[in-house]
Structures are given as structure tokens and as C-alpha cells.
Image (cartoon, rainbow, N blue to C red; front, top):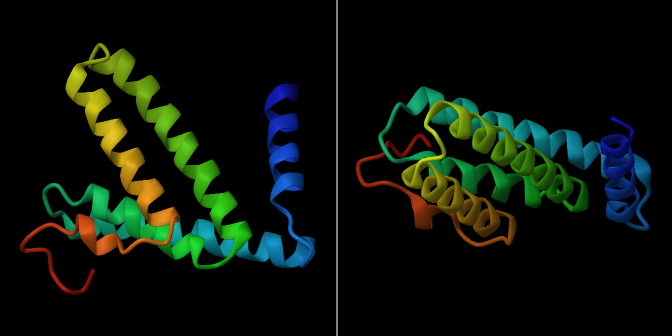
Length: 130
């Protein structure tokens, strides 16, 4: 627990720019909200093979907030990646398809955080609402 707290604190200190703590935390909270919104839209859309688009969209929107949003997107994406990997290991026996899916989702998240257009991952037939 102490190691985890230390890592989070150090990443916070490294992520804060000269703009100050308040704006960094504001951007981080807004970025976390963007990721939650993207996840909610993923669940609501119920469209097959659309997860990469929504992961890219959430990370893209969070990164547009600023350094705090980028930090929040990285932390949440890493946590989701590790948690999903842990669950996949015990549920599906660390299957090759699950690992490939994790890696492709990670690429989509990095694509979105880098500021590239998340529509690159948009599935055919997905409603324009999303």
C-alpha cells in the first residue's frame, strides 16, 4: 500500500506543470469524467467491436483537458489494463485472444491520448450519436 501511495504521489508531482495544483486536479477530475462518459457510452451503444473506439475517444477527450487529463487517462487506463489482465488470467486462463485484445485496447488508448482522431477506430454501422 505504501508503495502504491508513493507511486501515485510521485506521478502527481511529475505531472503538475507550472500552472499549479488546482488546475491540474481540475483537469484530472474532468479527464476522469471523460473516461467514465466514454465507458458509459460503450455500455449504452451495445455495438459489437466498438470498445477500441470508446477507449480512444475517452483518452482523447481527457487529453484535451491538459496535463491533468493526460495523467488521469494514463492512471485509469493502466489500472483497467492490469485489472482486466488479472481477471483474464484467472477466468480464461490467460488465453491468447484475451492478451491480443488487451494489447489492441492499449494501442487505442495511446492513440487517443496522443491527440490523434479516435474515429480511426469507429466501427461501421455505429450511430452518429457516439
